Image (cartoon, rainbow over all chains, first blue to last red; front, side, top):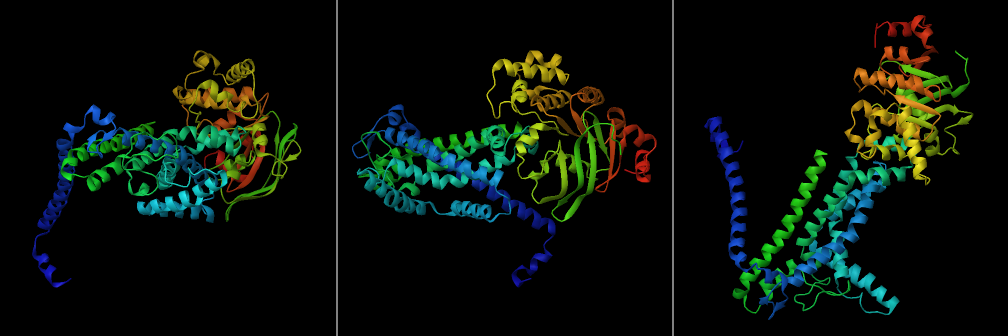
Length: 303
Length: 255
């Protein structure tokens, strides 16, 4: 034992225990306080500005007036397209890992390693990947092949694809968990009735894991809706007077709008209430999605 | 060994290994057609492993190997040309833990029927009714066929699983301790059912209860540590067993 702590020996053990409880409780209360303080601040400063017209109008005057409707709509379109692109791939991967792969097989271990690595990659790296892979590699080739120029630039489509890759680990992990929770007896009963492996997976295992697949999708949507860094250069735009009319159009996004308001406005002070109001909308959206996922998951546990 | 009836299942020198551990040692047996054959023995003696070898359910477990042959109606079921799904339609199975699919009673029974072919509603209705009647469940559920099967009692669920198994018209029914989770009244119902079904199906039953084997089976095989110690008519096994181990087990000296 090093010298400064030597005198600890003389302090009664009960005192050390009480001290530890004190530190732990203070930390816990501090976290609660931070959270409440932050939310209160946001609500007080943002609520007066969070009006119906703020939600339904287009921005005017370099985002300094009007509402955030295109950002709200863009975020919604983004996560919808992301879900359509990512959930099937994630579900298929989870089905492979849970139902088909031998747990010791090197392919299964490599896929698991890839999933874990993907989950740990900083989101700005996904943005670069989106530009390099989706826009430069795939998009440009589609353009060269079809003679169009729509795919070789940032767009709603490529943002959705990038976010789909980013949220894959969330989908894979929760779907696999749900698939594993399907009782072995159900699989055996199906196989014993002469169903093939695939028929069993399709007709028994997946239907019994629907809530898990839904939970995974919602968690992915929650993650995707709040993500900004990953779509920075992939097709999000700082202001738009129209909604995207095609998946190859650029679009506005709540999180990016927040970034724009706080860094690009002509008058930062005047933009503050707008920032707070946008934050409320963004938080409400992600909280709602997360609570929906928790709700569905708890229903699943009970069933 | 008894040979009064046509042999339905013929195993010879059949052994099973779980990775390194041998679970069954050179089992040779002739299981008669349209009779109830019971397998008894202490836990871990291999009786369930042998049962699950007859419809190749053991194939699902990683690291299982087997040697020897298992012949049903002159076909070696482990031959490469055998389609496992087709085999399992012919060799139905009822499990210890009866889990209906979380669907309606009707859909539970039609599940196996509609896997590979479209059938008319009339045909399905007819099979559902006859399967439920054969499994003595029709009177209890005929007015709620489209309700969830999860609302049935444990005994009813097990009979539904039997109905589900016979709906695909198998020739053999394997039953793996079908009554171990049931109360005495439900057990009696399932046992009556087994007796009735034996006129149309070859039934192989694994049971922990010697009384049950004595009550419902025509033939009994006694397994011990992966070996088939004795196989004969049930009456013979229980009244004058040929082997000392069998006698010790049925008189309750161990097990």
